[in-house]
Structures are given as structure tokens and as C-alpha cells.
Amino acid sequence: MSEGDYTPSGYRIDGKDLEAILGPLEADVLNAVYSFNKSIRVREVYEKMKKERKIAYTTVMSTMNTLFEKGILDRKVINGKGGLLYIYWPKMSRSEIERSAVKQIMDSLLKNFGETVTSYLVDLDTSNKGKRKEEG
Amino acid sequence: MQTPIDVIMWALTPPFPQVLLLSAGTLIMTHVLLKLFKVGEPRTRSLFYSLTLLAPLVVYAVYTPSIWIMGPIFQQVFVSPLGMTLTRQEEFAFVNYTGILCIVGLAFGAATLAVSYLFGAEIVTRCRGIMEVTEEDEPRLYRLVEKTAKRISVATPRIGLTESLQPNAFMIGHGRATMVVFSSGLISTLNSLELEAVAAHELAHIKNGDFHLMAVISSLKVVSFFNPASYLSASMLAREREYLADEVGSRATRRSNALKKALVKIAQAPLTPRRAILPDLMSGLFVYSQIGSLRAAFTSHPSIDTRLSRIGGERAKSGADRYKVAVIALVLLGSLALGFNLIEPTNLMKMFFMLDPGFGMQLRGFTHLPITPLMRPWEASPLPFPLPRPGSLTIIRIS
Image (tube, rainbow over all chains, first blue to last red):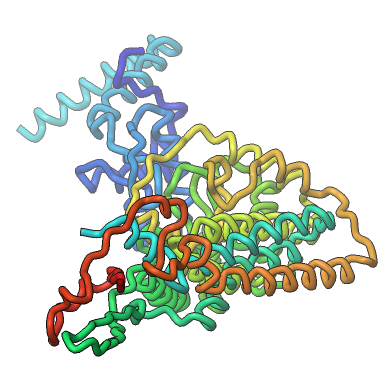
């Protein structure tokens, strides 16, 4: 696996947006991290998320830890207020995560159900072309 | 220019040497007596150690520190051309540098006490980035603390979190504002049993009234900031309070093994913070119990091995304990009263200076040096005569 690759542990059919490939909590935390555009502390994410929903600091902390372990966030130790603490920043952009996840899922689908996937994609392509012709 | 003699004189100006000697004496006596009588009870031991910090106040009650001190009375003798002698006594004030130290200590000590009661918790909250969490925010942690508080029979305190990765827990504030603070590092390092044991330790501090005791002790430490004995006794006292909190906490929750494991984990945490000096000093003044400062030398916390060996151990308790304490108190007070006589200002002066009838005071050990008269009576200037520099000794030989 090259750097910057993200392998989703699963795919949720009913999930919305990033929630389909990450846990719902992870997706929320990640969205909050993206909204900052800088390196941030757990506390900042916690305070932002707390405004929108009921959440525990320790939950945010462990979720960010999970995202780090998954290779989506990167972190380093700094000497901040109150001692040593982590600051996090996104290692992958949203599109990188999406592309990487789609690649992994499609690879897996092709490997397991290659023919079905190919015929489905062909069907999809033809029906799309048909639609486009109708529109045009 | 200040001569070495001036420096010795400052050091001997009351109440400075009295403070140093009395508190050092108290500390040594206390330590020896507690060892001799084998007093193991941390509460008693901590109270005995507090005597060292009270000693300066006793001295100040007897010898009030002042900015100015009336200088040594000196005599100038003049002989008029007609053979009449004229004696003039001079007394003048000079700056009492060591007295200023004592006054500064008293002022800052009082300020520290006031600040620790009024804004201590707030200062620590700001400096360490503590966020308060409610039952809604952290239900698991809250219930753990609530359960432990019930066992120890104290009111459930407020709960705070810091982002610090170093496992640490401490207590701030008093009364309703009492807050037990856990670091993120502690929560992620310990399991819930160990966390409960640490919470019990911190809550035991609340039960033992350590905020009030330590607020007074740390302001007394500021009062005699120039005195090494006060730092030593304060850290010995704090150590005893830690033993006491370990004991009370683990007895109430029966989590002595979990506490031991937690302490080992805390001590083995790989991170050693590079200290941010100013906020650390500021907040350190008002944080009296920190479980995370286990490893640092010269901290109030006892070494981990000593501590582990004490937790859950049976303390020798005999009926004679009360008599033992009374005997120690009597011996201590008696010897201190005798000692107080020795450190009386003129006695101290006599230890360093001897009075030569012809030349006034001379520093002991230097009496072999020849003294040349500064001024002979017939050279004396008519009034108004030049006053000598404050603090100096005028030596006049009348021949």
C-alpha cells in the first residue's frame, strides 16, 4: 500500500457521504477537522462538535486517535497549554480519501464478481448514453 | 562599598538569623524525634512538619522585622583645648536589608494565601487549559467519580479535563468550586479500576482538607522564601499528605492493588514534558496534589517505591500513640524554648564579635590585626562634626 492510501474496513450501503466508508462518528469528526483548515487540537474539534450535538471529549479524542491509526489524520506532540498534547491535521484530502476508497472497493468487487461488475457497468453506460441522447 | 563586616552585620540583624536558625532547628528536631519515636502515622507527621513553617511567625512576633534599624550606638569623645571632655552619643538608622527580605516574604505570603482562595482555581484553569465537563458530557467519568465520592463520603466535586498526554490528576479549588482534574493521558492509559483508584486518591485529598492545609503551607513557604528549611519541611509535609491520601482513598474503595498499578503506569509514562516555566510556576503555586509528578526529583511526591510499599500495608497502631505524640511535643517545645534563648540577638553578636574595651567591637578571629586610630581627640573637628557613614563603626582611641 503506497502512502496516502486508505483501505476502508467496510462499506455501508445506507451511509451518506463519507459515512458510507467511515463510521458516522469518524465522518463527523473528520468533517469538523476539514472545516478548520489548520492543525488543530482535540479540544477545538470537541468544542465545535459540542455546539451541534451531544458528545464526550473522550469520544472525540479516541475517534481522532482511530483516524490517525487509519492514516487519515496525522499528528505530532507539541508543548502546549497544560503540558504535552497532540495536534492533528488531515493527511489526505476529502477527494483523496474518496478516490482511494472507491479504488479499493472497486478492485475488490472486480476481483470477486468481475463479470457481473463489468456487465453492470456496460449496462449503466448504455442507459446513460440513451438518457443523454434523449436530453440532447 | 559594602565591606564583609557590613554583610555579616546584615546577616546578624534580627529577625533574619533567628528565623533561619529556629526553623532549621525545628526541622532537625522534628525529624529526629519522629524517627526516634517511630511515628508512622502520616497525619501526625505532617502536623509536626508544619511547625517548621510556623517558626518564622513566632520569631516575627518577638523581633518585628523592620525596614530601618537603629544603628549601633557609638560614642564620640572630644577633648576641648581647656581639657574639658565632651561625650556625644549617636544613634542613627540604616537600611535593614534582611528585614526587607522578611517583610517582602510576609507580604507575598499573605498575597499568595488570598489569591489561592480567591482566584487559585481560575488561574490553574487558565494556565493548564482545563475544561470543565458535566454529567452530560462525560457520563462514564462522572459516574465513576460520583460512586467513589460516595464511598469516601465527600460531595461529588466538579470534574475537569486537560489535553495533556502525560497521565496526571490533581485537585483544585475548595468548597463548591472543588474540581478534580484528569488528563487525557491518564484516561487513555488507565483502565476503569485504576482510574477509580486515582479518583479515590484525589477525593481523599478533599476529605483530608488538604486544600486548606496546603494553601496555608504554601503561603508560609512564600513567607520564608529565603529559607531552605521551609522548602524541605513543606515537601516532607506534602509527602505525608500523599501517603495519607493513598491510605484513606484505598481503604475506602479497597482498590489498593489498582492504585499500585496506576502509580506504576503513571511513573512509567514515556513522556517527560519540557516545562513551560512561567505558567507552570504560576499554576504550581495553587496545585497542591499532582499524581503525575511522581518521577521528578525534589517534588512533594514520595518516590514510587516507598509509596508502593506503604499502600495497603498494615500500619503499626498502638494505644501509646497519643502519649508518644505528647512526649514528642513536650521535648520539641522545651528544646526550642532553650534554643530560642541562644539565638537572642546579643548572643548571636557575641558569637561573631568580641568587645574590646579600647576599640569597640572586633570580629572574632581577626583580633590579631593591628588597629590604627582613625582620629585622635585633639584632631577632632569642632561641632558640627562629620557624621560617619551609616553602619560603620567609629573607633576613637583616647590617650
